[in-house]
Amino acid sequence: MTVKRAAVRVVPSIPSGKAGRPAQRRRTRKAIVDATIALLARGDTPSVAEVAAAAEVSRRTVYLYFPTFDQLLIDATVGALSQASVDRAIDATSAGDDVEQRVERMVRALHHVSPEVERLGRALIGLTVNAGARTPGHQLPRRGYRRVEWIESALSPWRDRIDAARWRRLVAALAMVVGWEALIVQHDVCGLSAAEGEKLSVWAARAFLDATLKELRGRRPSRRRLLRPR
Image (tube, rainbow, N blue to C red; front, side, top):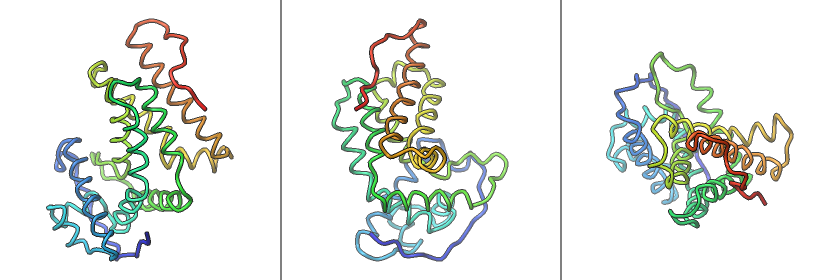
């Protein structure tokens, strides 16, 4: 899938609170990205107006979530190329299966990306990093909604066992050790191979899950292996 460059437009950041609650923000962003994926599938690069109409939001809302249209196009392309494989990895285990197995499958799937998808992921990071500093109080994430949704889906059997604060912390911790930023650190900073990076992410995910279980149990965690690396 080829992404054609669109005109870049940057709009001022809008303070948090005006964009709705986190769950609503994720739904809005998903609607915008899904609409863009559907329009791109036709073979043409859509306009902002077409995306807004398809997602049933305003043009301003599109730019609130994606300060540049290039960011939206790349994000949608990455989603079209990687969404199905990660979804399949998580869905391969049932809701009753161990969370450790679900998280491991997700971690490994996020590491198995094609060179094209990795290139787009790096470009996406560049666009969001170069967007400039946030205004005070602006809490709307610039990227990573898809990653957070995958993590929450993998952790879903634990949702009723973990209090809200620990849940947010565990989701955020896992978000640090999977995804584009983790891949870049593993490859560019640490010089790890793809296989070494994958094992490192599985190990880090295991450590966060183990620490959470230790807190919940109020004692040292079991010695059983929470995840079973290849």
